[in-house]
Length: 374
Ligand code: GN1
Ligand code: MG
Image (cartoon, rainbow, N blue to C red; front, side, top):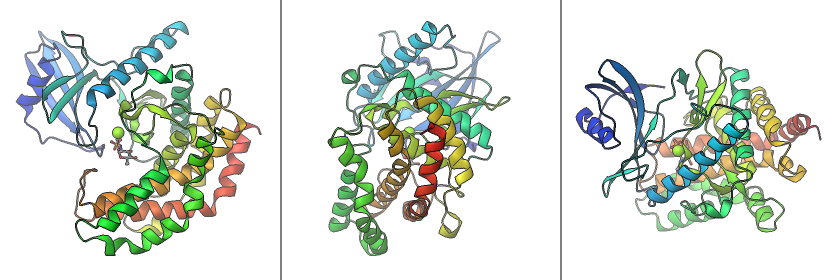
């Protein structure tokens, strides 16, 4: 993870004080890997004692109901914490713990555009933007599977739907097609080929949603943003320690979490690789993640759900292709970009990955069956 500093440090330190943290000195680092929120690590010293916090400014364009998100997070982390305690484990460092303000809220509304939250930094952990070690990836898979397992008895109706249709792929596609129709900044001509390919694969990307509507696939509490860098890994042991980035935890399909993780971590290349000849599904990494994830899910998932996981990977990859391309055609309003064609490149890269997955779908299915013992 690349760390640079580009915010007003004093302001960030002042925000941390709003969460009741007192200190004599501070040091700030910026975490760069998320595409949405702004994240800072703040190391403080107070009377010789050191402590570290993670402070995040929530992107209110993407998350118009940040209070709802923080209320959801409070419930979900509370549920996991209780579960760990009931199992005789110490929850510290295994589930995110957000700082509460005097009024009991776990957020600070500085003004309409600046919504903040803070949690205790979990020491000796690291995040990876790319998977290199299959054993570590397997640990991450198990941990994301376990996250669903820990929440499988959570009363889903208590969660506010803060991101309606977040992984409803047909809705995402419709949005992309509609934005292309409007063509607000004259970029549609650059995505004609991608549009054609996405339309051609409707029978693939609409399948999960149809099975959900028909009640074949059940809703569960899912994470919905299972990128490899959304899990903290112990620097020494390679164990997956804690699932982070809980903004999108809402009812979803098991296959969303499996699929999104595969899309990101089992690619030969990075998510935004501009040279699409380098992009493709690495079956060795696929198997590593799948074996971990399925080992945690096979007790509570139906056979149909387990069989939906491979198509989940293809679906999430097509979906991200459409989301990046939609943002490009819409004038780059949603995802942070680092150069003008970034979203176009991301979209094309994801599309190349989805097409490669299509060629490998039966091998993916075989691996999953073997992992699930079916
Ligand atoms: C965003 O914030 P980050 O980088 O974890 C996005 C995900 C995408 C991902 C693509 C709320 O996640 O849905 O899969 O970028 N989060 C939101 O890298 O839209
Ligand atoms: Mg996120």
